[in-house]
Length: 176
Image (tube, rainbow, N blue to C red):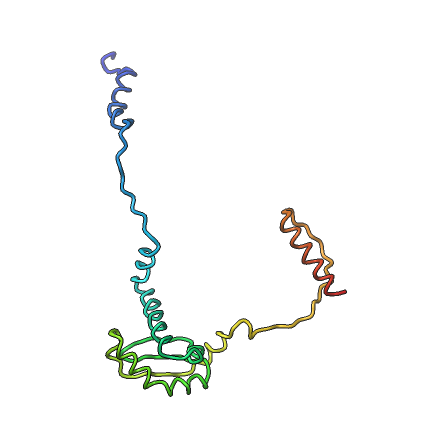
Protein backbone atom coordinates (compact mmCIF):
# COMPACT_ATOMS: atom_id res chain seq x y z
CA UNK A 1 0.00 0.00 0.00
CA UNK A 2 2.87 2.33 0.71
CA UNK A 3 4.16 1.86 -2.80
CA UNK A 4 0.96 3.27 -4.27
CA UNK A 5 1.12 6.48 -2.24
CA UNK A 6 2.71 9.50 -3.80
CA UNK A 7 4.36 12.02 -1.56
CA UNK A 8 3.52 15.69 -1.58
CA UNK A 9 7.00 16.54 -2.81
CA UNK A 10 6.52 14.25 -5.78
CA UNK A 11 3.20 15.93 -6.58
CA UNK A 12 4.77 19.38 -6.33
CA UNK A 13 7.64 18.38 -8.57
CA UNK A 14 5.22 16.97 -11.16
CA UNK A 15 3.01 20.05 -11.02
CA UNK A 16 5.82 22.61 -11.13
CA UNK A 17 8.15 20.78 -13.49
CA UNK A 18 7.88 23.62 -16.06
CA UNK A 19 8.23 26.30 -13.43
CA UNK A 20 11.35 27.72 -15.00
CA UNK A 21 9.55 28.27 -18.29
CA UNK A 22 6.51 29.87 -16.67
CA UNK A 23 8.25 32.23 -14.32
CA UNK A 24 11.38 33.12 -16.22
CA UNK A 25 12.50 36.73 -16.29
CA UNK A 26 12.76 36.72 -20.07
CA UNK A 27 9.88 38.57 -21.62
CA UNK A 28 9.15 37.74 -25.18
CA UNK A 29 8.76 40.78 -27.35
CA UNK A 30 5.33 40.88 -28.92
CA UNK A 31 4.52 43.06 -31.85
CA UNK A 32 1.18 44.77 -31.34
CA UNK A 33 -0.13 46.53 -34.39
CA UNK A 34 -2.61 49.24 -33.51
CA UNK A 35 -4.63 50.36 -36.49
CA UNK A 36 -4.71 54.03 -37.27
CA UNK A 37 -7.97 55.82 -37.91
CA UNK A 38 -7.16 55.92 -41.61
CA UNK A 39 -6.79 52.13 -41.73
CA UNK A 40 -10.04 51.63 -39.81
CA UNK A 41 -12.00 54.01 -42.03
CA UNK A 42 -10.56 52.54 -45.23
CA UNK A 43 -11.53 49.03 -44.07
CA UNK A 44 -15.05 50.24 -43.31
CA UNK A 45 -15.43 51.91 -46.71
CA UNK A 46 -14.36 48.68 -48.43
CA UNK A 47 -17.29 46.93 -46.75
CA UNK A 48 -20.17 46.43 -49.20
CA UNK A 49 -22.77 48.61 -47.55
CA UNK A 50 -20.31 51.44 -46.93
CA UNK A 51 -18.95 51.40 -50.47
CA UNK A 52 -22.15 53.11 -51.56
CA UNK A 53 -21.58 55.82 -48.97
CA UNK A 54 -18.02 56.30 -50.14
CA UNK A 55 -19.08 56.46 -53.79
CA UNK A 56 -21.88 58.90 -53.02
CA UNK A 57 -19.41 61.08 -51.12
CA UNK A 58 -17.00 61.13 -54.06
CA UNK A 59 -19.84 61.88 -56.46
CA UNK A 60 -20.93 64.72 -54.19
CA UNK A 61 -17.41 66.20 -54.31
CA UNK A 62 -17.48 66.10 -58.10
CA UNK A 63 -20.92 67.74 -58.23
CA UNK A 64 -19.72 70.50 -55.90
CA UNK A 65 -17.13 71.41 -58.52
CA UNK A 66 -19.64 71.35 -61.37
CA UNK A 67 -22.83 72.89 -59.95
CA UNK A 68 -23.59 76.11 -58.12
CA UNK A 69 -24.32 76.02 -54.40
CA UNK A 70 -27.96 76.94 -55.04
CA UNK A 71 -28.30 73.88 -57.28
CA UNK A 72 -26.70 71.65 -54.65
CA UNK A 73 -29.23 72.79 -52.04
CA UNK A 74 -32.04 71.27 -54.12
CA UNK A 75 -30.42 67.82 -54.28
CA UNK A 76 -31.54 65.33 -51.63
CA UNK A 77 -29.64 62.30 -52.94
CA UNK A 78 -27.61 61.22 -55.94
CA UNK A 79 -26.24 57.92 -57.16
CA UNK A 80 -24.77 56.37 -60.28
CA UNK A 81 -26.17 53.10 -61.63
CA UNK A 82 -26.19 51.39 -65.04
CA UNK A 83 -24.50 54.25 -66.90
CA UNK A 84 -27.07 56.67 -65.52
CA UNK A 85 -26.73 59.44 -62.93
CA UNK A 86 -29.88 59.60 -60.81
CA UNK A 87 -30.59 62.78 -58.86
CA UNK A 88 -33.47 63.25 -56.45
CA UNK A 89 -34.60 66.79 -55.74
CA UNK A 90 -36.79 68.26 -53.03
CA UNK A 91 -38.81 70.73 -55.12
CA UNK A 92 -40.17 71.29 -58.60
CA UNK A 93 -37.95 74.35 -58.97
CA UNK A 94 -34.85 72.29 -58.25
CA UNK A 95 -36.00 69.66 -60.70
CA UNK A 96 -36.47 72.17 -63.51
CA UNK A 97 -33.19 73.99 -62.77
CA UNK A 98 -31.20 70.74 -62.70
CA UNK A 99 -32.90 69.54 -65.90
CA UNK A 100 -31.30 72.54 -67.61
CA UNK A 101 -27.90 71.39 -66.32
CA UNK A 102 -28.09 67.80 -67.67
CA UNK A 103 -25.82 68.44 -70.64
CA UNK A 104 -23.21 70.16 -68.47
CA UNK A 105 -23.30 67.29 -65.97
CA UNK A 106 -22.81 64.62 -68.65
CA UNK A 107 -19.96 66.49 -70.34
CA UNK A 108 -18.08 67.13 -67.10
CA UNK A 109 -18.64 63.65 -65.66
CA UNK A 110 -17.24 62.05 -68.84
CA UNK A 111 -13.91 63.66 -67.93
CA UNK A 112 -13.75 61.60 -64.74
CA UNK A 113 -12.39 58.08 -65.28
CA UNK A 114 -15.05 56.40 -63.13
CA UNK A 115 -17.95 58.01 -65.05
CA UNK A 116 -16.63 57.92 -68.64
CA UNK A 117 -19.39 55.56 -69.73
CA UNK A 118 -22.22 57.83 -68.54
CA UNK A 119 -25.11 58.00 -71.00
CA UNK A 120 -27.81 60.01 -69.29
CA UNK A 121 -28.90 61.96 -66.24
CA UNK A 122 -32.28 61.37 -64.65
CA UNK A 123 -33.67 64.03 -62.34
CA UNK A 124 -36.89 63.58 -60.43
CA UNK A 125 -38.72 65.07 -57.50
CA UNK A 126 -39.35 63.07 -54.34
CA UNK A 127 -42.05 64.77 -52.28
CA UNK A 128 -41.76 62.40 -49.29
CA UNK A 129 -38.09 63.13 -48.72
CA UNK A 130 -38.48 66.88 -49.21
CA UNK A 131 -40.84 67.13 -46.24
CA UNK A 132 -38.53 65.24 -43.90
CA UNK A 133 -35.36 67.09 -44.96
CA UNK A 134 -36.46 70.59 -43.98
CA UNK A 135 -33.89 72.55 -42.05
CA UNK A 136 -34.33 72.98 -38.31
CA UNK A 137 -34.49 76.78 -38.69
CA UNK A 138 -37.60 76.40 -40.83
CA UNK A 139 -39.41 74.59 -38.02
CA UNK A 140 -39.63 77.45 -35.56
CA UNK A 141 -42.34 76.87 -33.03
CA UNK A 142 -43.73 79.62 -30.85
CA UNK A 143 -45.71 78.41 -27.86
CA UNK A 144 -46.85 80.00 -24.67
CA UNK A 145 -45.56 78.58 -21.41
CA UNK A 146 -48.32 76.72 -19.56
CA UNK A 147 -46.39 75.99 -16.37
CA UNK A 148 -46.00 78.45 -13.51
CA UNK A 149 -42.73 76.93 -12.30
CA UNK A 150 -44.34 75.40 -9.25
CA UNK A 151 -43.34 71.76 -8.96
CA UNK A 152 -41.33 69.61 -6.57
CA UNK A 153 -37.69 68.83 -7.15
CA UNK A 154 -36.79 65.45 -5.61
CA UNK A 155 -33.43 64.97 -7.33
CA UNK A 156 -30.54 63.85 -5.13
CA UNK A 157 -27.74 64.85 -7.49
CA UNK A 158 -26.70 68.43 -6.71
CA UNK A 159 -25.91 69.40 -10.32
CA UNK A 160 -29.24 68.13 -11.62
CA UNK A 161 -31.05 69.74 -8.70
CA UNK A 162 -29.50 73.13 -9.54
CA UNK A 163 -30.41 72.75 -13.23
CA UNK A 164 -34.06 72.10 -12.36
CA UNK A 165 -34.09 75.07 -9.99
CA UNK A 166 -32.72 77.33 -12.73
CA UNK A 167 -35.45 76.09 -15.07
CA UNK A 168 -38.07 76.85 -12.43
CA UNK A 169 -36.70 80.41 -12.04
CA UNK A 170 -36.75 80.98 -15.80
CA UNK A 171 -40.36 79.82 -16.02
CA UNK A 172 -41.33 82.13 -13.17
CA UNK A 173 -39.56 85.06 -14.88
CA UNK A 174 -41.43 84.38 -18.15
CA UNK A 175 -44.76 84.34 -16.34
CA UNK A 176 -44.14 87.60 -14.47
